[in-house]
Image (tube, rainbow, N blue to C red; front, side, top):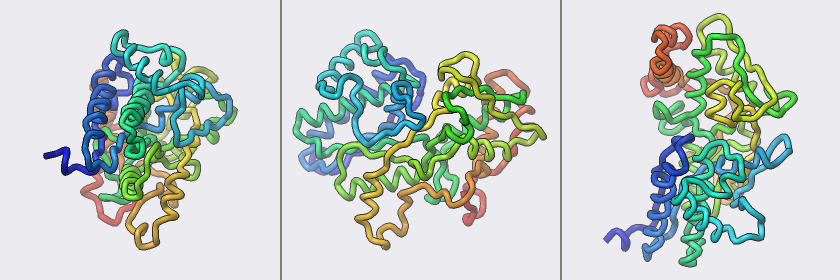
Length: 355
């Protein structure tokens, strides 16, 4: 019954535990993705299989490129030579991961997290299964960058309690007792040159729906892009406004690896702080050109950066996550109350509030 009636399949269910081992990710990211892809491709009326990956599946390019701003296009980046059969290599790597918990290509590249490689491998395996059935035109891979609260829908600031990584960063930094937070970079002026590509969740949803409606296949970035991404300085300015005590910790940049034991633990976990990626969004720009003004009226296809970046609609979640951090570190809970501005959940605020 299901096979005959389903036309579009969205596969967005996935572990987002960045630091789980590849062996763990084999069973909660890779195997389910392969299984659902094979199942969906059997549907006789399938129009589109949509697989959600991450723009940071290609974050290993930061280490292999010396350019200050790493460009990432909407395509597959082979981990070997361009002329190699990356479908065959993907199958070999998948077999190795199942047997040993790693692969030669993973060991040869410096991915920020096992999760990034798992998504890179999953993308290739999804395409490999589609190629087997001659259904490459049925597969759409959506690559969000760092998920952030919604710009507009269902309301400004909408997010789940742990749905925005930069909110977790803010919570950790709020509790930092010193005046300096050590971060790593290769830039001479990292405050201005390093960037964070945070995309509102409603932008991800609307881009996905538009590309499905237009029949897009292949890889599509759901990102803020070069025009909408934030400099570290912009993010830090917003962070400082949310800390209650009179002094604010400042970034202390060191020249080093993103695995360095000398940087702040959150920076070591999040890894991409101090980097800069220029994610292409050309396919969405072209898709938007095909739509009339009336069709685009209620769509949020691009991040709204018309106002200064702010974290004030995240106060409630920052506070709650700071409390969790304090509990884990066995610090007094009053530290979160002293350092964080306590806010109401945004759903309870005025509907006209702007993010």
